[in-house]
Image (cartoon, rainbow over all chains, first blue to last red; front, side, top):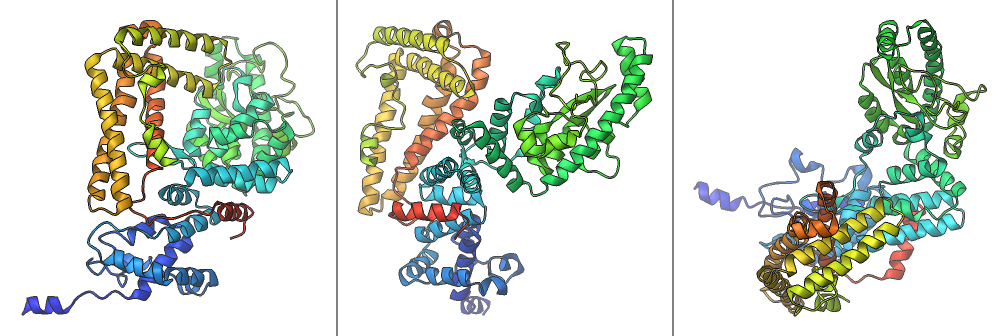
Length: 394
Length: 198
């Protein structure tokens, strides 16, 4: 009796659900959901115990708003195009790994690019074996646009092209490169800058621009293509890229200004302590720690826009900053104050990149000043005895 | 293009070609060719302005030369390498034919090829390349040391994966339906996408 009722209750799959869920994956540029729909446990298969009607898989279906979108309806029509639809049904009924319809995957990849889902686009193009060629097409568009002076188009094309980079060293299979600024920012600041000029933001203009391009595009190859461009164009490119990636850049500039103001005040206090000290570096470090306490952290907190006092280590400040403002880490440095290591703004005020990004303005009318001694416990000298005319924050 | 690539074994590292030799070369020829090539490479490195990209390139070239000597001077190892390489090229051809003909064997051939290509690339394009760097003769000629090995291990993985990718990209589709690309249309689509249109 029980067996009979089990046979009678064969799972029904609404073809509309199948078409709409596939169209949704294409519309969203979501290669993961698209593949899932062809898996053995897919709710789109009659042989699977899973169902679109459960909460678990309801997310695969479009919202009413999405379903009403003409672009979505166009994709549904593409899914239901007789030859495609027949193939989909055949594959969902067959008891073997499915062969997915390439025309829909191509549409999905293009949609993923349009929606800024470059990792998904890279995987979809890769499945179709055209990732490298598509990547090259986008980078070529970027080169042409840059030669023609169309910086916004160049930035968009480069972001897409660089977003399709693959990490061949990934294990066990190559994977799309993902934006991992928090990790890579720590590598940028891995070595303590013993001399002010060792800080990332204190590099000569050419080096800083190269570092910024390689770090932000996350692709040495894409950055290398831009090397032949004149300096002013690379700066314009970076300016646009940074502001496009980080809509809150202006807030960072303001926070940087506040951090500079605090750093200058601290420097005055430090100079006072230095003048009264016995001159031994160890004694000075202790004295600074004693007199300043946790106060220097206020500079790093201001840099990140924290209103409350946060007791991070330097690397936590760098990581947090890389998350909030990826490009911000190019203009800061680790700084030892007494026994405390913090993060302070440090860059060349005459750097064209700092200028383009409005950072020169935060140095203020005074122009050159010293905020904190570069050695942490020593004086503001940059190591070669010459005053650092181009260093606003050292 | 794909047929030529298979015929020439593109993607399956050819250590004879790296040393400029044919597969009948004797161990003595291998050593001579290795020393000459390594000398040329060292001279080239000495004259080059090194940056990160070039450093990686030269490190890889050095690793390839070391592996070529390490594998080809040992008759047993070299015969095994060449046999596996030839078998793999033939297997790729057999799968390609089966896929084109829609034969039922295609899926089994694909799975066998997939397993063997991974094993081949891991052994001859990574493991033995690293082993070669610890070989006395290679160390003497190339000054290869622990620091080289540290840098090379990531590089060799990258190299292996990129070669794998190169081979995969020319193989028949198996989990997607075949598709012909109209590259004029693709270029227009790419331009529209970059311009923010859909």
